[in-house]
Amino acid sequence: MIKGLLTQRRESVMTTVILFVILIAFTLFASNFDIGTFGVTLLSGLLKAMLLFLVGAGLALIFGLMDILNFAQGGTFMLGAYITYDLVHPNLGALSFLDGIPDPGLRFTVALIFGTAAGGILGYILERGLLRPLYKRPLFQLVLTFGVSIILLELVKLVWGPTPYAWTQRLALQDAQFVLFGQPFSVYRLFVIGMGLVMMVGVIALLRFTRIGIIIRAGVQDPEMVAALGINVRAVFTLVFTLGCALAAFGGGVAVPFLGATLSMGSTFLLASIAVIVLGGLGSFEGTAVGSFVVGIGWASMEQFSARPEIGTVWASLAPMLLLALILLIRPKGLFGEDR
Amino acid sequence: MTGADLLTLQGVHTFIGQFHILEGVEFSVPTGSITVLLGRNGAGKTTTLRTIMGMTPPTEGVVTYNGQTLNGKPPHTIPRLGIGYVPEHRAVFRELTVAENLKISERKTGDFDRQADSIFTLFPDLKRLYTLRGGSLSGGQQQMLAIARALVPDNKLLLIDEPSEGLAPVIIEQMMAAIRELSQHKTVLLVEQNFRVASRLADRYVIIDDGRSVQTGLMADLKDDEATIKRYLGVA
Image (tube, rainbow over all chains, first blue to last red; front, side, top):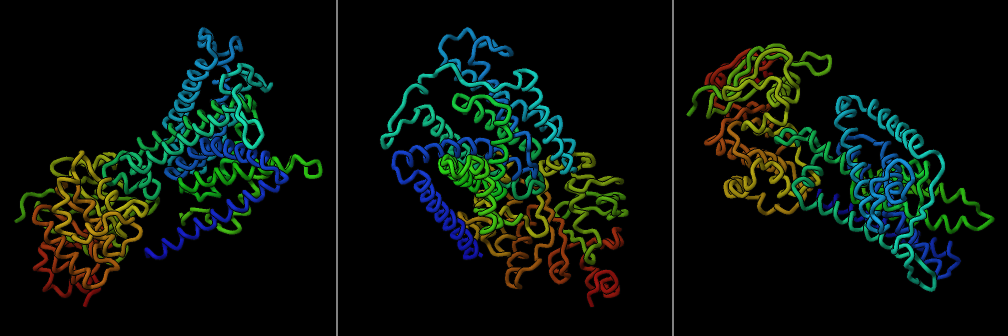
């Protein structure tokens, strides 16, 4: 049995390594073998990977533990972005209680905390108030989270209007640039990559080294048995849902300075994140982490590649789903997936 | 040495979906005893254990443990009263290590440290396998782990479902020795399909047939009652 598991593991790792080699080669090709463009494309890929991880981590945890595909995760990402944006930009409209803070950097930090908390609170209410009565009706849950995502979209439209917002409050980190292989790259984007990595390590550490992490990992396999040990598994469901939504809102908050706030950002990242968790292997958190790098780098290199006039930019937006289809053809369970 | 009844079921009925699985189960488990639930496949033995644990709550009847009624209690609060459950097919957490599988069932900080010596005396293999993942263990090792997990908190009653299922004879002997050993300090309610194992382990029996408890008594008496054994258990 141990031999079988090791073989399966080795296959997962080998497939992942081969995939990364192909992706790096494609990135190089898409960059016309220009090392500067290659470096920037790779960093853009890492940036996307981190944002995908922040949305996908919550999706994967919630799906793994509760078998719920939370369609509202994209809406939470968007909500985090809009709240952060509004709090940082004075006199925008809905939220103005941080306008007294003169430093945009400090305002942004506090706004990020509020945006993340709003996502967490939304997740808490969604799980406790709406999903809990529907635990025995999985299809209803799916429809419910889809409905909530539509409500969130309409709510954002109602409060902030349909027009996209571009970030105008310059942060010191945005103005600072560094040069990579002769190409400029914003320090803020590097900061987002760093924050994403910190979150990734933090969530992995939580899952690996804490009691609550052990309970979550056990619950992913058999929540009924976890309850049979005397653990309130429903409280764990609430915690995971809250944490998952907070992570997505945090992702929206850190992304808004360079993505801006748009109504389509939620659905774009939701779809790509679904590709991440399926491609990584449903229920596998490490699969989600690896999957976010695969989709992030693949997406960025496809953007670079499709910038050529003869290709067309539509291929860039198709990249996550194309990668998903490709991986599932090779490994139907995803990179690190097991039978569920 | 048996004492007052630790667990009592009175007129218990349980449904799973639309199916009426238990149609009036009554028996009691005296403190300090090993009581075995016997019966053919599908008779309702596993459902009886799950009903006690609140996983398939009774629609009628009363389940009493240590003087408290368990009816209506949320499933996660029932183990906290001192009931350990070892389910059919073990339900070891495959992704967790042996150490994590044991520590997850702590109810108070330090439960595992307090019980580690006695657990590893009972199941020495687990010490050697401590860092391996649950999914990589053999069936016998998983069964040991599942029982050990129920021993981490200070449970008074252990519900063990089919401990010999799918195990080699030599492993079954080890498992029986372990259950006998732990019954020195715990009360055990066992589901066991293998009558030879059941008759050597238990001092009391309950026969479940078509969702009803049809006969209870001392195992010493049942051993000689070939007609009952043949009728309800299909063992010649």
